[in-house]
Figure 1 (cartoon, helix red, strand yellow):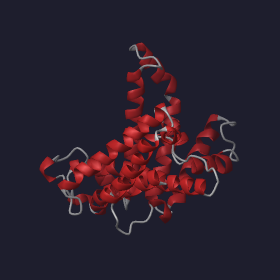
Figure 2 (figure 1 turned 135 degrees about the vertical axis):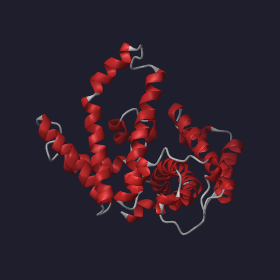
Figure 3 (figure 1 turned 120 degrees about the vertical axis):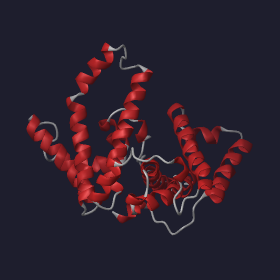
Figure 4 (figure 1 turned 180 degrees about the vertical axis):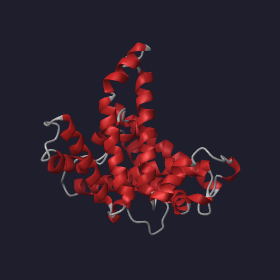
Length: 285
């Protein structure tokens, strides 16, 4: 539960101050601010979504129930297909079991399979809200999945031709960076209020990078160290999670270190959390 509150109050709600300013009127900000806001939103939505899931999982454990993990470090995915196996697993599984498979899934011809993918992702976008930005976001992710599937063999041959086999660390890094980049572009549509705003942001990322004007009205320069430090802390814990399950390791620590960890987490939330009336993003869907 504490880890969920850290994600929500320290990471998501802190980054929301910047994201809300920029996406409220993107025409008023330069390319650097648009880029920073989009990267911040990727972490905001992840920590907001996974934070409430962690709080729910922790609450359930207090009551003696075991709930499924809902997020599995999705931004470490090497493909869009892998991303959707790691992102909001309960919802993705629901759409797979109750929409994609009843439509025929992949047990049909290629044209029908393409339609099944686009319907599933289109409906998943509409499920988030009756707005064209959500629908196109869903269809764009479906297109990503189809494109990834169509070019899988070609990409594998190209990587092997330049000496990068499947197990190569460089190839894994390229896959993670590429997937994250495509996901960022899709998040613009998800977050933008209108298609016009989304179009403006997508076409102005590279314009007028003014490092002296990176702050926003709600997000002053003094907030950046806290925001960046929170993201680094998040990534550090997630990298440790790849090696060992942190939650299973903590109970094995000496009691002094264990309670020091608990207290450190609580004080981090108290000192660096943002305490506005900010609901979870997912509650609006």
